[in-house]
Image (cartoon, rainbow, N blue to C red; front, top):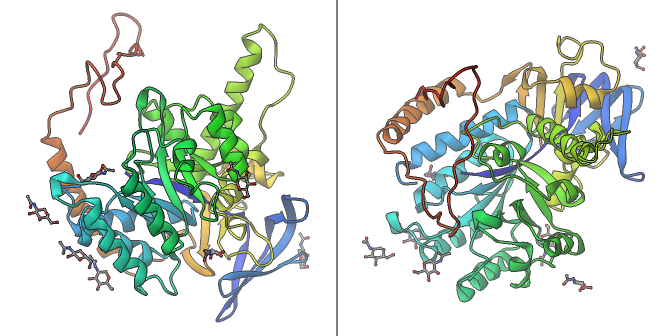
Amino acid sequence: MPSILYLLTVLGLSNRLVNASSTLFWGGTVVAFDEDSKSLSVIRNGSVLVTNDRIAAGEFAAASSFRPEDVYLGQLVGLYEALNGGVTTTLDHAHHTWSNATAYAGLNASIESGARVIWSYAFHNISSLNYTISDQIPNFREIAASNVLDGTATELGIAFDAWGPNPNIPETEEIVHLAREYNVSVITTHCLAGPWGVNNLPEDVHAFGILNDSIPVVFSHGSFITAWGAQLLRSTNQYLSITPESEMHYGHTHPHSYVTQDQTALGVDTHFTFSSDILTQARLWLQAARYHFFSAVLDQWRVPSRNPMSVVQAFQLATRAGGLALRRPDLGVIRVGAKADVVVWNARESPSMLGWVDPVAAVMLHASVGDVLHVMVDGKFVKRDGKILASDYQAVRDRFLASARRIQSIWRDKPYPVVSGQSSSGYEYEEPLEVGTMRGQGTGYGELFV
Ligand SMILES: *[C@@H]1O[C@H](CO)[C@@H](O)[C@H](O)[C@H]1NC(C)=O
Ligand SMILES: *[C@@H]1O[C@H](CO)[C@@H](O)[C@H](O)[C@H]1NC(C)=O
Ligand SMILES: *[C@@H]1O[C@H](CO)[C@@H](O)[C@H](O)[C@H]1NC(C)=O
Ligand SMILES: *[C@@H]1O[C@H](CO)[C@@H](O)[C@H](O)[C@H]1NC(C)=O
Ligand SMILES: *[C@@H]1O[C@H](CO)[C@@H](O)[C@H](O)[C@H]1NC(C)=O
Ligand SMILES: *[C@@H]1O[C@H](CO)[C@@H](O)[C@H](O)[C@H]1NC(C)=O
Ligand SMILES: *[C@@H]1O[C@H](CO)[C@@H](O)[C@H](O)[C@H]1NC(C)=O
């Protein structure tokens, strides 16, 4: 169940190849980033010149049931889905390290996808497969010491979910040592806390001396983060990845995330469950944040006098904040010298965007994945004229469908888990009120069409 942090950069342009290593996007509106003022800069009828993998100029005129094959296909098609939606960078909490072979399968797919992937090797004891952290360390070392990532857009990170409470201190110190030894691109962890358990709070990670260091640490969710933990994020400049849709879907919620948005980027959880594009996440989050701050006023029987969160702020969370969470100021922005990760929206023809004036509002409030015309990662097109540019996409799709059918049938035969009594975190389960969507006796939850 990967928790993914996504970035996108947004335009609305035509493009033409200037020469083999350069592409000029021209005649559109550029939502660029001004490094001096640290704010968005909208350039109408602007252009962007990409040379190799960098933006050269902004010209004002112009687990167990998964075989390695299943992991490979799931990872590859999942990344195509992300690219199709305009997501150029993915921080992957790569849970699929269930054997040496599944680890390589997911890594290979990440490299082949063409996406920018910070593939973060999950260290976890998979007792059902007899593949424990002590088995994973040699696999990780082999990958880290090899040259498989050289010249690719994939980088190596570490994912670890046992920082606290009650960590195995020598084992956790070994993970920290590995992170430093190979100077990984990121460390990531799931932080929920509260009744959910799964603490991994900033203070738990800080206890191992790695929070206030040069390696970025990204905390997924942070639902029940403490006030002190939030301050630690600020003082060490580390980030939360809020995954708005999953936190609502599963009930993880995000009671304090509205006030930690200065140390926050947006992410996608379990992307087989719901939408994987960051724009949907940003839109959901924007409106949820407005609801939250509006409610505080309405609870006092007063009427809100202004809007608490802007489309520009949501756009910043969806783009540049993801880069900052990775300590990569060259990601998620359009400016000279930034990585050439570019998304082109077809704002001229899309019925949902026709008549737009403010390009940031047009994207944040009206656009859909269907309006993403071109996507470039590291100076290379991965989507062009509305189509993913995977040479063997048809064959991958057929293999993926066969894999999906096999796994779905395994899960269909498993009984539903019993959710009553005490949860694994020690807190009691409680049934929420069920919604009635028709008048009368109530319709019940309804059938699941699986
Ligand atoms: C956009 O810029 C180009 C190049 O300078 C110019 O030829 C064209 O007239 C401009 N279009 C508009 C609508 O301003
Ligand atoms: C991963 O790619 C390498 C190099 O292309 C290849 O040797 C290896 O067999 C692949 N492994 C898996 C599990 O796909
Ligand atoms: C993994 O298993 C080892 C060996 O049983 C144990 O010492 C360690 O605490 C476990 N680590 C985690 C994170 O579960
Ligand atoms: C699990 O793997 C270890 C070595 O990593 C081996 O010694 C042990 O026999 C294996 N156990 C089972 C049940 O396969
Ligand atoms: C996994 O890879 C490591 C590193 O090469 C190796 O030591 C180990 O024997 C491999 N495990 C299996 C089960 O092949
Ligand atoms: C680790 O890598 C980062 C990014 O490439 C670099 O800035 C930093 O200096 C490296 N740190 C060490 C200790 O090598
Ligand atoms: C982080 O490190 C800096 C520089 O060493 C130090 O001034 C600061 O107090 C540290 N912060 C925390 C929370 O440890």
